[in-house]
Image 1 (cartoon, one colour):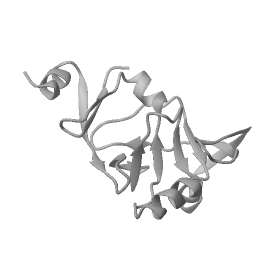
Image 2 (cartoon, helix red, strand yellow):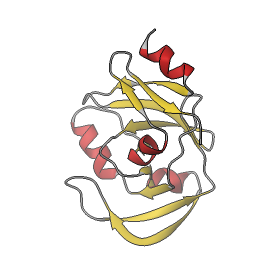
Image 3 (cartoon, rainbow, N blue to C red):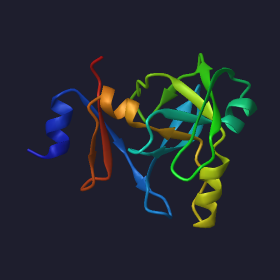
Length: 147
């Protein structure tokens, strides 16, 4: 039995991944019905939506009164997104919360490597909660359905 078949028989959903120009895994998804590019980032603690996208979509978010950022980035203000739904293929990631942050530094770094910008960073909060498995052999992310 293949890993894919084994995981699917044990309640996992398979999400196809592609590699961007930098070699990082990405997938497509939707944020409240709008198509988005999602970067799979095992080093990110939380799942984060681009501030510019949240504003463009007119989504509601509130400041948390704290800052954060990735490796090598400045401390950036963090907001919590309210009432938005993130979907990946036919799977529903269950982050601790959906956060909003300025991702321009991420997208500038991607652009410098001729990679397309991303709208969402899928973080370890989802991977931990849903016992994620990343299968490099099939370029797939598997998320467990059960709550």
